[in-house]
View: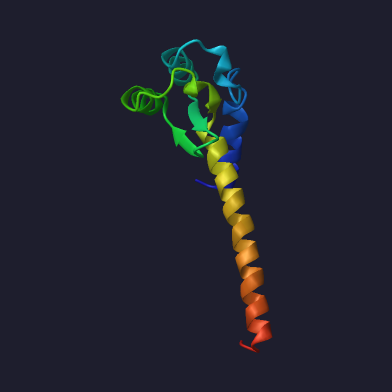
Length: 111
């Protein structure tokens, strides 16, 4: 799948009404996970920087016996958006690495 295909999917999916909304609106973790599943969204934990499918997060939440309101920090978002952001970060890091390598090669007159 090309970056263009991914961008097209993000445009469509990010129009979902719950996308990128904070989860504090939900009273229970199950309610939040059900809403995400109904809309094809996933859950992103900005503290842990991890993505979860709705069912995966619900199991994680119940298994780990997380504090009642810990699910409120989680964001509902399109997993396609997460892929795009990840690819952009990799590109930026690759550019920085390439610049550093060129600087080292120039400093030691390597070719």
